[in-house]
Image (tube, rainbow, N blue to C red; front, side, top):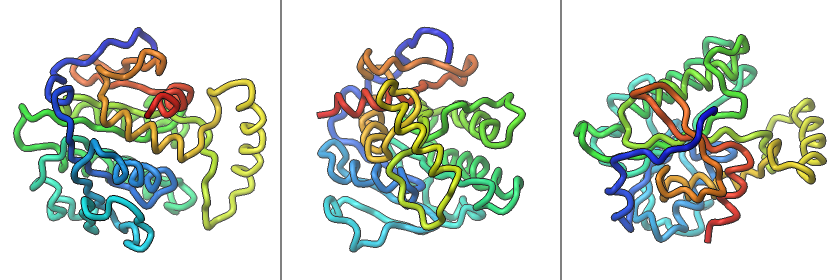
Length: 260
């Protein structure tokens, strides 16, 4: 994340557009469901597509139902998903898993990286000049050179997404996710949550509530890299030809606080 943030170019389209369409992949996850709620409640998004292995039960949607389009897709047959038929202004991806839930390292990488990259590639407009923004939920510590499976997979995914040709790619790297409601009780996660909960009183770098994160992601998707408030301290990362904007834990919290 080293280096001073520089606004990405070719974003005039987003600055002039008051009404945008949004696609979210992974809306049934812990953060994804809050992101979906924010998109549906926002007057800035006129149409929201929720595509995934599962979709949100309609009875759980309390606002914006009239602008929601839902579709279940098979990531093994992504070319049949219909993603290529739409020209989404903003593509949000909150899809992810853990090695424990996936069952093996291979299954984890397939879901956490291969499915994400395939979906983002399919959602990219066939018109190379089309302006589209991509917003991805990664993780703090993501590093493609890491010797550990999880941060390495996240880092490789970030780099892969940045190379797909989107006009603007924004990556969120949050810390510990607070406020989750998982069906499986995770002892280590619970203990770590208590520690980060205490630390959050003295620093905003270690923990974020998923409601706050969902709000921040929706706002980043609306604004784009060039219009992010300086207080967010966004940074630029990646290689030439595959640059992306990074928003860390503290930046996500600040962005949500500044959102009207």
